[in-house]
Amino acid sequence: MLAVAIGLIAGAANAQTTVGAVVGVSDQSAGANDLPYLGLPFGGTKIAAIGLIDRDWRRRLAIGGEVSTAGQISGEQSQRNGTSTNAFVSRHRDTVFSATAKFGVTVGRVRASAVGGAGGALRRTSREGTTASIFPPASRAPFSDTLTNFVFAYSIGADVRFALTDRLAILAIGRRHRLKDDDRLASGVVARGVSSTIYRAGVGAQWRF
Image 1 (cartoon, rainbow, N blue to C red):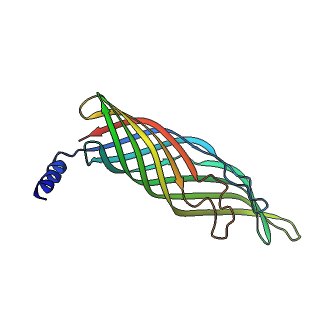
Image 2 (image 1 turned 30 degrees about the horizontal axis):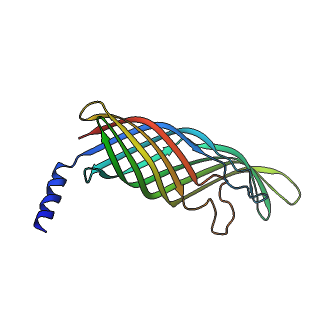
Image 3 (image 1 turned 180 degrees about the vertical axis):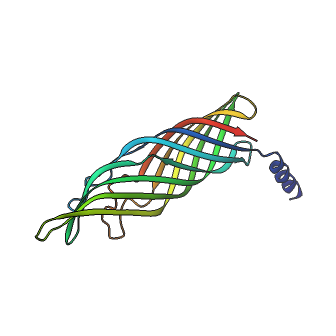
């Protein structure tokens, strides 16, 4: 037991921390169609940004955290409830926060790592348009709404790091984020019409200290 404790202390003393950031693309497909309640679904491809921090835990294992976000995707939609119909443009963004574990193999200056993570995602959708009563007289009025919630999410992916110096490296990463709300409200109807699966990839830099 003493030897194990000494080994853990020595490993912690020699452990190093890295921080990194990448810029790339985010792809999110259209979700389910739920006419006449909500339609049409929408998706899109936008610029993505991912920031991360890792701490060496073992020779091949690192633990850390990351945040992944992207520009807003948008689409024209309509919605019907019991007394009115709404027509609007939806603008949506998912920001994912993950605790990660990375198992890596190093060959020369290159280190490749398989990545798994879990955490949560902040989903925010803003809607701007018009609303009209289904009962006469038919007239339209401005409509505005925001739907925000935080859901469980998990991520899988890979990192490839090419060391330029002992501290600086080029970093390429890819992620698949899965949000566990299935884009449904508690009632079972579609919440947004946006997929709960997100693919993001990018290239950037990593600094070790």
